[in-house]
Image (tube, rainbow, N blue to C red; front, side, top):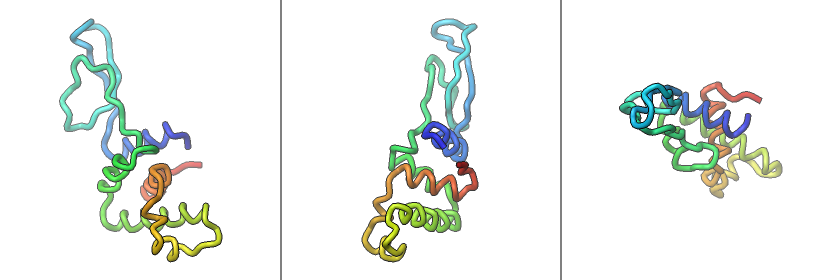
Length: 123
């Protein structure tokens, strides 16, 4: 998956929606497309509300992780260990956990683990 596809899939899983509205500041006929969370008020006069960049932002990935229930969070940890171990073929997962390698996983690795957890990862 591309970074953009990953970001969109996670955003949608976290409740972001691609919507549209009218730009009342400039031209009432022009239609704007933007991302927003359902609880947000319409963004008048704002062309785009960018979704978080989950592939590069650890804080955004933490927020996504919080959207998982406890069972999913455990499954996420298993996937994350598996993903990190791909790059460490001579080390055991248990050993990786003890030495903080999994805790230091990149945002991209966490994004993949998140999408695998919710069944949205595609190759």
